[in-house]
Image 1 (cartoon, rainbow, N blue to C red):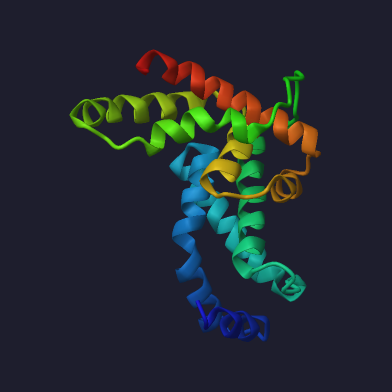
Image 2 (image 1 turned 90 degrees about the vertical axis):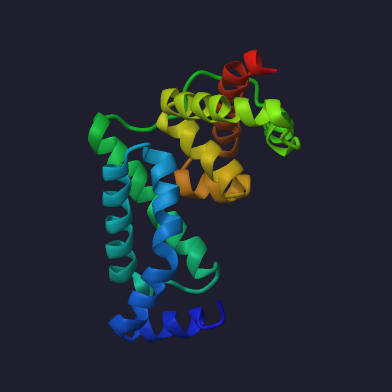
Length: 191
């Protein structure tokens, strides 16, 4: 998006039309991200609205070290987590130590499952796989789900995830490990 830097600079000067273009360009991905974290369309919409409001309000603080999309995603993740906190009344904390094995290796099962070329039998089970994944994502803690989504759906590094979730690397790896372990358990009967 070559015009994005121009739009950001114009928006920083108060140009609402430029900010509207940024909103139009990023709303859908933000809604998808917030939806995967909150698992509730109303909470996701609230999180996106809050994120966009916060982005507008804090645009002067955007220093350009990261891309605008990265900066906006961080705001959206924080807004989605805040929506979950409001709903549950609890802090999102990493608990119960799990082996912090290499989370990329832990995700191999899921990646291999997703990359297989679908044959007729795979098309039939695709709906079941999707249903089980959605169900299991709903059973995860907000921290596990957020860390998993940021790593495996958004492709973020551990360091980026730690910054967005305000946790250390060990807690991040544990959350991702637990999420992958839960998904493996849910999908194992389909092997």
